[in-house]
Length: 315
Image (cartoon, rainbow, N blue to C red; front, side, top):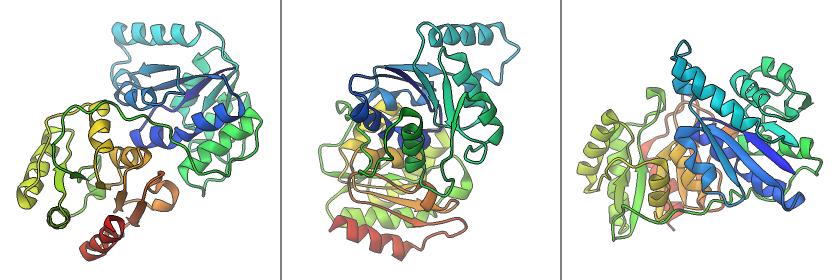
């Protein structure tokens, strides 16, 4: 069986879809699984040994230059790759109009959520096969249930198997370390800087060097201030695969509701997720290690509450 998974973005969403691969291979041994994903996140499915081929796309770039001949040439080339060989099923795990449109570019029947289940109901019109999955479920469970419905096996009851193999370490300290992830795509997600310094100091007390991650110039400035306040360290700019290696070697991870925090949990690291603008019930930290989520929409968690939860994980 040839299966194309369509889950293009964002990073946390891509991570949440990973357990589908293990589920499919458990019920369809030998299946060839390919994955369509934004180029920035292609390293994530590439870390899964069950994904034979990753097709990177650059829709976030292309949509800003739709009148460009270069853009149309790139889209034609991707469409040609998607239609080179027919798929037995094209499974859109995203449920958006953009993901449904790209799923339709592939050669093969397209399956996804029905109108009541899709994040954007209009996406359901693009599918030949539809299934109902509750919107009140965790994102990981929604993906697993949708795959089960369309691939003909019972709803999975086992813990999610993210299946990632950590890449070989590159940059990293020699001492035992913890990772702090204080940056996010929206300011509403941010947690006060002074609280991060307090977390870093607590980790220092427990013999762990705080490593403060960043991904953009303004994020680097914040990371450097936090690291200076807790005698931590700041890495150079790291790509997603390189960042995954750093996360895989951490003794503890504390991060906002952002992609790298979810990736750390999927890699099996003890991970504490801080939520300031989203309910963790639908997309809380999930992974095979010690994981916990705190906070919620308009519920900025108190510093002492985070430190208390951190102590539980460290024990």
